[in-house]
Length: 230
Image (cartoon, rainbow, N blue to C red; front, side, top):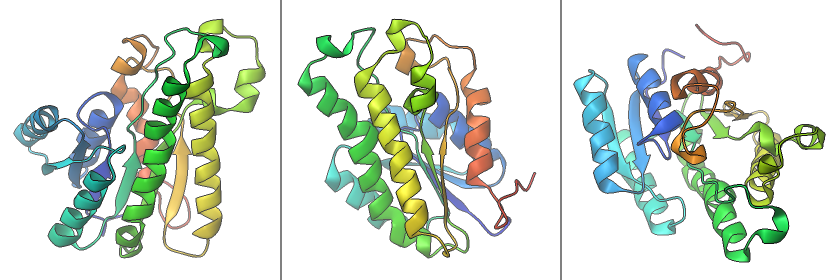
């Protein structure tokens, strides 16, 4: 992947997204820090710049169409193409509530970020990825989006209708896009980073954000034959 240069990560101002940006930046990529909060996005940019990483904050709220369009226009003007898109932005609202206790607004809110926003970002940036010599898309999913995993006996706090179903939808989106893109230079995959210590789950988990970022980076840097170049 020596000829690849640019990577955009949504929700990159903290957690797994930030660590993914840091690792890709250390590999020589220009990392575009997609974040909906300008102050937090610029703070992340400054931190990475201090580490010698070529980082740039890009205002991008996946639930606001105009920010997606403006971000794509900025990337097109500054770089002319995009090599890696990592759809990392996501939310979880259940906090242990069971399906019958969930409000419709919370279900809609979850899908707006985790699925509809991801779809729109992918669609808008696809023309720029097509201009890459080997575009890569990684959708950050979850083991909770697996029907097989949800069939296993688990703590009921993991019986999260909004989050789990939104991630299952992400997996289907990835599969259907992969069929459309078959034969192109683009590879698209879903990644399940594992139970990670982040703000998403009130800093509970078994993995650090750096450990969780590893699988995302592998998929983002796949060679044409599907192997990892490092």
